[in-house]
Amino acid sequence: MRVLVTGGAGFIGSHLCDALVARGDEVFVLDNLSTGRYENIEHLDKQITCVVDSTLNQEIVRDLVRETEVVYHLGATVGVKLVVERPVETIVNNIRGTEVVLEEACRYRRKMLITSTSEVYGKGIREEFCEEDDRVIGPTHKHRWGYAASKAIDEFLALAYWREKRHPVAIARLFNTVGQRQTGRYGMVIPNFVRQALMGQPLTVFGDGQQTRCFTSVNDVVPALIKLMDTDACNGEVFNIGSKSKISMIDLARKVVAMTGSRSEIAVIPYEQAYGDGYEDMMHREPCLKKVQAAIGYEPKVSLEQILEAVIAEMRGRLDVPEL
Ligand code: UDP
Image 1 (cartoon, rainbow, N blue to C red):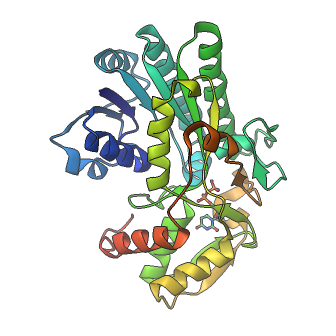
Image 2: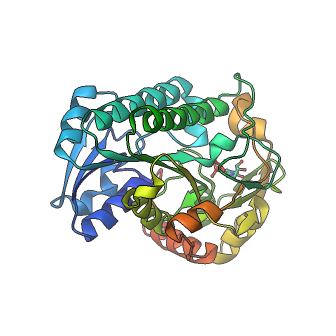
């Protein structure tokens, strides 16, 4: 199959390209290399076609969509730090970029899979979030919620294309996805902690450290994305993808220190100091996985320890790089 992956040079996109190439697909990548890195797909150099451009360039998107049979749309501005620092870019890229890709995919009737995010649930006080739950989004002066709102608009638009034009599109709401090639530069906690531990720097735990997250390996997420794309019954539906094993950030920091054998201290830092006032955190974020289990038999297999081992091993080899 000929497949287009927007954001294919990013962390998740590059792992998706690996899996698609391995199963014999002809892969085209569209990535503006803003947060993605060519190094992530360099090893696929001869096997894929990479176009360095933006999803905002409608002509390029049209050409690529016409060339291919299905479209995985992962291209987006992500990462809490980036989203808080560059809110205009975040909102424009995420809304207009998705609008362009949907419009062109619909023109040529190419099935789409869009990756969304657990951020769309906002700061709801429950621990477990189901696809149909109400969303609780904070005020507009907290830029973090601009990201959540932009991804929610993407979902609304995709579902509208399905309802009005019967355009086949499925939506994956990804919870905290982690693994090799993820950078800490845009705020993600695991690459940050591992890097800090390996450098002997204090691990920066934000807030009181009691907030919990459920981390999922990218190696569990990628096969699920492919199955959602390949299952017609998933059209017009939203699916959580994540894991049920939860850990607090303070315990995560302790685990990283133990697993790296680091002498680093753990520093508890107020949110305002970390992100300024554009940030609000949510205490818990755990997915309900019943829907995705029923649809594609999804079951995450990789443990947090296995994820951390892989990230630590990869980062040990790259510590000469000033910013990972
Ligand atoms: N976090 C932290 N130290 C860091 C980066 C993040 O304590 O250096 C916290 C952050 O405040 C949040 C959790 O770790 O409570 C997960 O953050 P991340 O940005 O990885 O994902 P998200 O906020 O989207 O769940």
